[in-house]
Image (tube, rainbow, N blue to C red; front, side, top):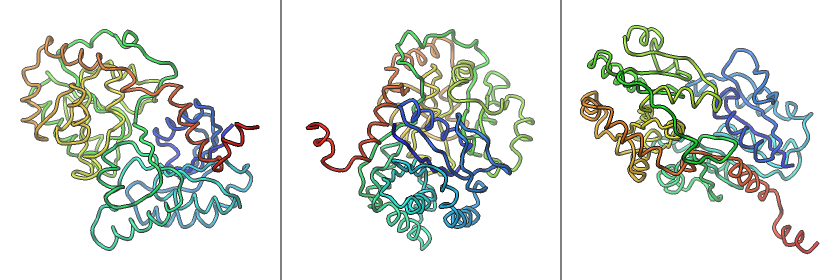
Length: 389
């Protein structure tokens, strides 16, 4: 069984849990180690007991750098009691630095995989700091065996033009995971009652502009449209997230949810899925293909996106969704203001008509991923030797 050491920047990140589920479903044994955003260590994640590397704070770059420096000194002793892994996956740049330290601690040749699912704005600056960050990434990634990323735009707009990494690339989209293969008939469900029309914004809530835009749009229609928020708000990005939501008559926040357990319930309660993010406008926000894109479409929620983003281009290729020319309440009103049930039925039918594998990973995908990783641990020529044995 392939033994993977998974080094992560936030052990409580739902995306970390989803990756662990995929690795385990594919037949891998996983040891989890990483930082946390909580005051106390996290006791358990998907049956694993994480090795705690300390606390970090969201949006505090200097503090995170100090935490990484401290962990680099102690990671050998932290990992000392665990068996040597076959492979190390480093999620994000800071963990790539620690992966190299961990590899040295095991005193063995352990392949490293670099998992990069976001391009931080610091990496794209043209000043000394940006150049230094890119140089550090190139140095740390100089001998990684595989780059795992989630959007072709990350490759086209960052990794290739900047020459950041020479390793092969595995495009692993942020698809919804379900154990069994899905047929078209598996996804039919009663449409939620309308009006009011409900727009769901689920997941990592970090875009203040989206929140204000949706609030103003809902006020214009005085209850004909409702905005349902679920997930983890980045409170560092909102002066008073909870107070703002409570003051808006047609906004509601339903708190966190479990993925994949709660996805069918939360998405089948809404008509549309908000797949727009201005958190890093012009950069990462325009390149990513977010989790909510796949999750919403999987359960028949019609996605709303900007036409000039990677998400918008993807939806245009699929022939589905509502694509806005501008990020304004007026543009949203022009697209949805006269919405009637028959029109929504057409939009939803197009989403449900897509191949389910467009939106979902199943166990066969998980097995393929683990086999890909297993191949990185085999020395050149080993397959031929095994075939002759």
